Length: 139
Image 1 (cartoon, helix red, strand yellow):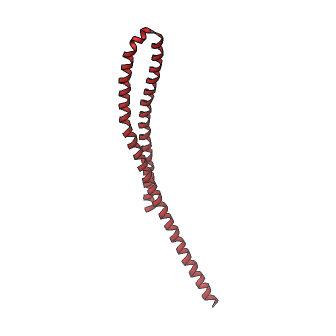
Image 2 (image 1 turned 30 degrees about the vertical axis):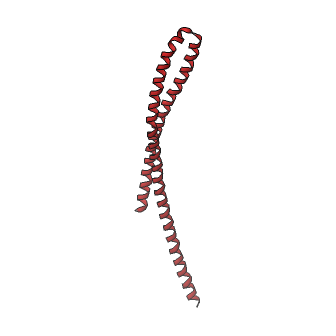
Image 3 (image 1 turned 180 degrees about the vertical axis):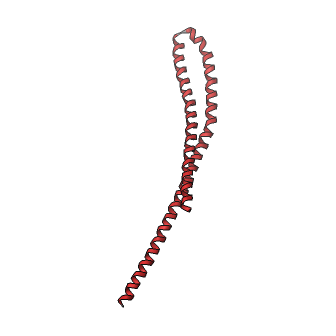
């Protein structure tokens, strides 16, 4: 009965780990998307800077573009800062799920070891009894 309970708890812990992994992947994908947008923005700035250096008409518009980029970068950084606690929480949940699973596995192993030790003890008692009976017969 206890063995079945531990097996059930281990399966539930596996499901909890899978759920925590999916949650972490989702949050990390969200973080990666924001970082990718920041990288694209940096590439765009580099490209526009090169164009503005070559064309005086574009150079006049460059200040407006840079202001827009600064606002967009600030907005993305705010989003990134909001995601960081979510990532930490998801990692903590995953670590906790692994810890719970490990506790159940250790308990299962301890019970197995105790049952094995009890089996060996009983086998030893039977062997002692057989040896004692054999000794008595030889006397």
